[in-house]
Length: 392
Ligand code: TGC
Ligand code: FAD
Image 1 (cartoon, rainbow, N blue to C red):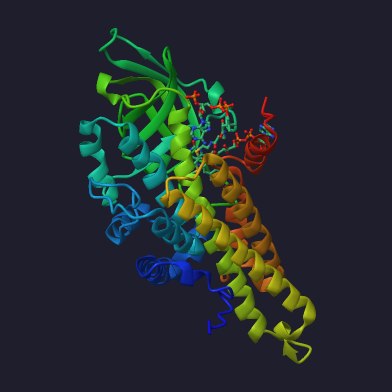
Image 2 (image 1 turned 45 degrees about the vertical axis):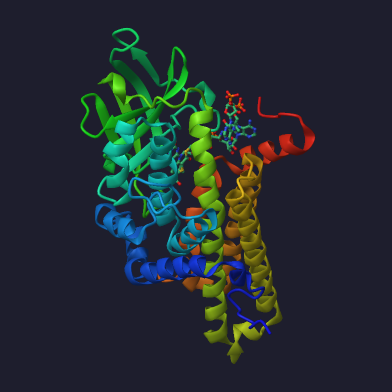
């Protein structure tokens, strides 16, 4: 009979293939050795050694893990999902780095880049020697990127250079990126541009004072008439479909990642409840605590099943953006509720960086907002079931 594992009572992990389990365990081991001992400090001080970690993540094979060729692992959707789950069990900032590098920056170059662009960037990015970022959001346009103001104008006719002006806000990896994938309005619609670090007219300023995703670099990018060569444009796509298709991939990573964050909060609360004595007995023995732990466990397992269902759909090529919205909306919200409940079980200890629960809860506030807010995913699903679009 199936073993009763408190961390996975429904044995959802048994539905994974041997290879997927191996990837899950390998990534988990990496985070336990390399991330967990330091993450509380990185979060507290708002610093993370990204340059140092990137090649290690590259060697682990998780950068552009689901892409084929160019040094990428070519893994299946569920294998990529379980890697995200383990990364985010350590910290949402770590999963963010991997999402932005692999699913947003590399995926955009992989899907829409010329052969030269792919050769120039992808192998180094897969190895973690080069870092990428993805600029869609602007100070005045977040949920509504169609109205973006950043603009690229052709200087010299059909084959000439481009001049890029405007700014992008809240850009993960912005100030450390070797290449920024920047989406801008042009005469022919929204197009993607590769802007290299050090290009004159490009400045990056980090966002400070964050109470969430502190172990992640977040920056504003400003483009002051940045002159780009003709071949800086991604030739393969025109229109908002370009960035939104890459967002599907990153949102997919999030719907798995948040299962990891939720599981980490639940297991931290379970461990703590079993050893913390009040009124002469472990608090795990109180019915109110048990109810919290059981509710957390139910929600973690349901979120895991949602992720696995969407992953298998994706492997069949049958996942639609609406399926991804289902998972992103449900699993981020679930993780946030689990994190807050876990925090209460840990009492005062729950507010410190010694335990992961409030760090996860604070991180998840960003995850709830980025890659489409919970309201936007509600409206995407509202449209899917009613046929009525309620955005505008
Ligand atoms: P709409 O008219 O519906 O669509 C415009 C074009 O895009 C196509 N499309 C999609 N294609 C692929 N996947 C999707 N999910 C798509 N959604 C729409 C659509 O078919 C159309 O194509 P075409 O060829 O017919 O022109 O666009 P809209 O302006 O009405 O907006 C729809 C809306 C609100 C859903 C969209 O704007 C949206 O998703 N807004 C949220 C923006 C967002 O998610 N930003 C995220 C920025 S990146 C980020 O947060 C990274 S966090 C990094 C980290 O992990 O650290
Ligand atoms: P707004 O769009 O101004 O929304 C404010 C509120 O209004 C929200 O509750 C929203 O749901 C609601 N709202 C808006 N429109 C509607 C509507 N039609 N109906 C109902 N409610 C609505 N962006 C990038 O491009 N690249 C990155 O790498 C990146 N990294 C990020 C990292 C962090 C830590 C954070 C916090 C954000 C990041 N973002 C990034 C930006 C993120 O994608 C945006 O914050 C997000 O899309 C929401 O935009 P906004 O913050 O401008 O909020």
